[in-house]
Image: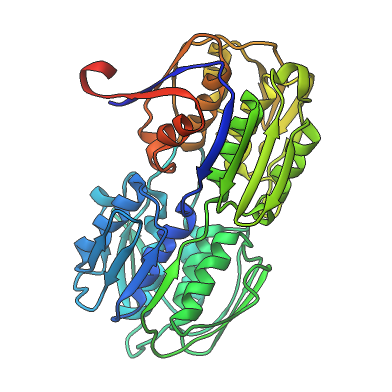
Length: 430
């Protein structure tokens, strides 16, 4: 099992290329299931979750070829098995995104209840409720969602879908299903994330009729058939935010090529309040910070919420900044009930954090000390890497397979900025 060895204390300086967004690439790979014509995706990140999704669609009979430059060519013309088996999706929450496209195009689907990070309950009941409103018959049987159209129907029907909560994957599933439905679908309380906007733009290139994406009300006029397209995946705002926090914590200056400042307003506002300089430039974002952090940065309280608020996927990384910034802060997690698992590992490095329910109270310290820590989920992994970059001595981060699910060669990109970090494999890791 691979590990990361980090020798802390170096400033980060230079330029880093931000990869395509995992949370856009995964639904867009599923969108290729909606057509029997070729789909070409560019800027697809090299991630474990992407590899898992490609295995999944190939298992269905889809032709899927990926090159070294981030381009994936898909063709679902010969799709013969509209099923997502447990053994292929048990590690990936995004597998649920196959349900809507398969049901819309083929009239039936069998998709395993998904897995993923153990950060809390993320029920699929909203997906089922929405697709049932569009006329689907869905039962959960032996760990699978089994869906089909009623006898005599060949297409889903448009509907008004009002979810009980804002759900990103639910909004994406409904977008894809509604694109081929009969009549008009109105999504209310829809998620507004940039990744949803990117998916909608891809669907529009395929011939879908969509209005209002990027707002809480999305209107889709169904069409009988979608065609192939060529589309570039939007840059990953969470990867960009993670590198911003790393530069802020270590000091230095970096240009994040392809990063979109307008996708990170809530995070950038907090970084500026902490004492960093952040500027949007042509084709990227520049961040500068003075070190050591305890002397030049002020801790910031924040509460996670749906986009465009502070993203839950940046909570752990910003907490890593707070633990070595001057002053006290309160971090409130409102999205997932079990997303403070990184706290105990940060305490091993010398952080002062106390958790009460949904609130973590952080008291900044002047210095962290290197130790062996264990990653518990994707974003927790990134927070421990940031903490290790500023800790005195060596930090060994175990279970980094979580990190590989969502970050494209993070250690290589950090080395390019001057970090002393290496991946240990095989005997070295043992």
